[in-house]
Length: 90
Image (cartoon, rainbow, N blue to C red; front, side, top):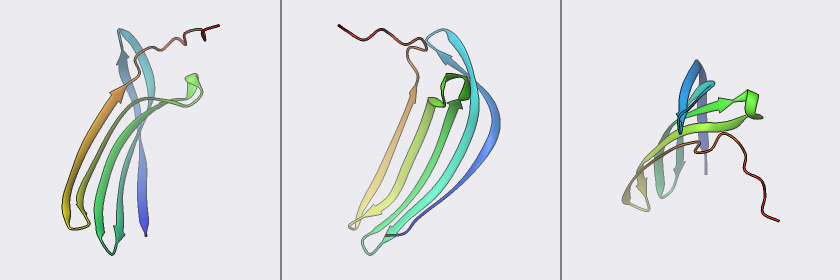
């Protein structure tokens, strides 16, 4: 099943992570997944923070098209909730 993805680094972006302003690089992606019973288009935006080890601090992903002849539409987004790691339980 062919999967094609194209991406572009748009520049820096500020993200509000529960009151903490973080800066990262905005990456925009578009793609398609095609097959005998599948025709999906993907669009996504990720904000990656190199200063935090390359963690994704915000994202938004949309998928739409058809899968086995049925319409598909999903859209999800998230923002990093806690920029400071919490200690592991003992």
